[in-house]
Image (cartoon, rainbow, N blue to C red; front, side, top):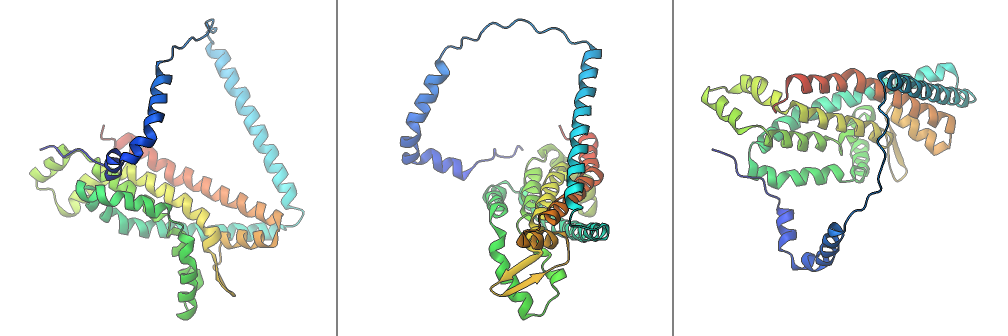
Length: 302
């Protein structure tokens, strides 16, 4: 039995609303008129066929230009930072970056444990997915820093450790990317495979590891990668949270950048951003890129 085609209540609402039709009707008429206009493109002479040698030479020249630009940019950054920052402080900033990296990795892992099962449950039920996926997308766009003052009050009142309890604020607005990508993956899971696993009585842990997790893995990687990148950005505001005269600091690269920004210390701002970029690029190349490659080679369903 085939699954019913997905529907969007937002699209249905727009189609039924007379106001939208009145507003969009002139626009649609203008678009149809433009589509009927004849196109008179100027004649172009055929381009000369590039040889393999010329193409390879151009690639090498372009790569040399890019490497030279990168080297010059790095030299400018080092020279600018060295005016105010010592070598020992650079090492300390890399240590702060490592602390933030651990926070991001742990938070993405915990968010995955929570939202992957929930996302699978929702995605395998089309009616529930149609209702809840827009909500997850809305929560992903919701400004999570509105919650920060309440977190500061709770941490102060309960005398909690800011290094631990400020950390969830980093993933507060980014965890939803995991949820709605997993929902999308479970919704797109082939009906034939679901029926085959049911016919062969594949259940429990075996169903999770052999059927559904491989099927949604490419979608999960996309969501986790997006959540990871967003958490790095959120660390700048989440590791320093304030309410009134109370300001809490968590030791990490985000608080280092935030404090340097408040002080207008541009060499330290540059250093913090450069170190964060190094960590993000290194983590993407060593973790997310291999996972994407594995998903593309081994777990494609089409």
